Length: 246
Image (cartoon, rainbow, N blue to C red):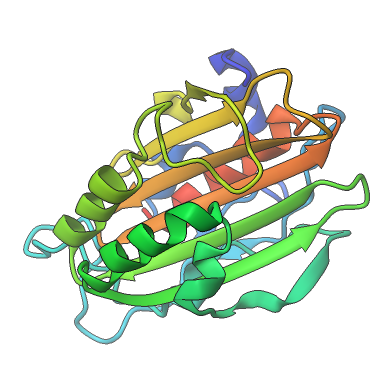
């Protein structure tokens, strides 16, 4: 993954020419438009203009004082990142609710039983997802898991998935991975991002995936591509989903 903060400071540009797109700018916004990242020659995708969904009347944002459980009161489906221009969206994962079994299908068969038991014990409320394929063959999937509170979400990520290290539970078909992370200037201040990527030799496809710990909600972003999953659109996708959950 790219590590040059200067590149991504320049890359976080508002769609439509608003000119503000850093994570700091996002967290300062009051439930209004969320800037996307403009398409450029470095491989970024053309995401639509994003908006944070409306909250129920009187409901706090997840990281405000008094919201001890860091609960997202907005409709979880409205927080799933939309697909970029040119994508072919999977009709079974088009931003709506999906089953626990659908989510668990991302992991090796011999791990699913233990993960399902952990989910049964973790007060999981909903799972929403969107998946798509780009013209260059890059396959992406975004899953949002909402738990009863931040404590249950963190426990599932730490205890069941070991999601904060290179020893994380692998995804189905993946091999050895190395850990990496987005820089502090590339993520929202109240969330935590944990990222790994397959190392060579990784076979026909390379897979990158990232967990975003955002209060009561745990996001999983996966991208894979034959010959190698590009770092730039992966970082872009993780950054935008992170901002939507902040």
